[in-house]
Image (cartoon, rainbow, N blue to C red; front, side, top):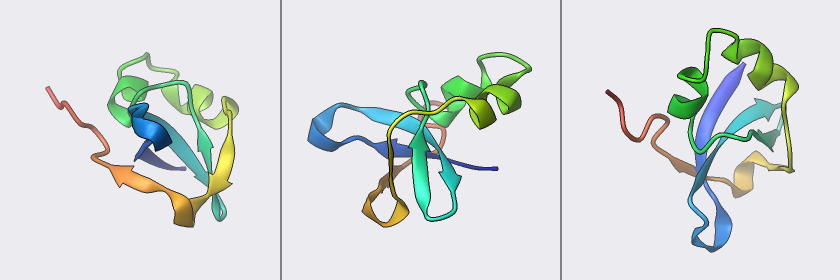
Length: 69
């Protein structure tokens, strides 16, 4: 599974996303770091959850983990 943190349009911040083929699927986390720290079952949730889909080529990538500890 490939994960990214992307910048949302209209300065709405960032979101974690899962890549499926040539599409990104938005996940309900502000970045990949938040997803990873959300619990040991993060891989299952990242694979199952999803929202809006859009082409990978239209994404503006952000740092994967913007605030590493």
